[in-house]
Image (cartoon, rainbow, N blue to C red; front, side, top):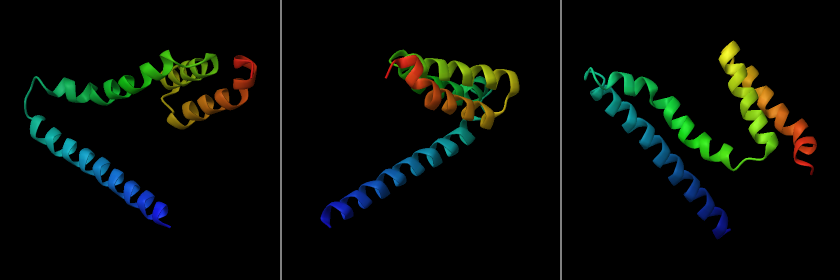
Length: 103
């Protein structure tokens, strides 16, 4: 029972930290938006943050993970449809994993 309470407290603390981080980033962005040189950086930042997470994962990924990422990027570039791109990437991972990785 103690483990369950500890787990719930840890989840609540993580959720609080994530929420406060996002909220503080929003308010800092509002304050910095008025500076002319910072505006292009703020507009490009979500993509940069996403790539900072994605690039190391792809570098260590196996064949099916790299192929799924390439499919997602290609579909997003051509259609700009997040649902279609995500669904295709998941399908490549689920259906192509055993064939491409030899598991």
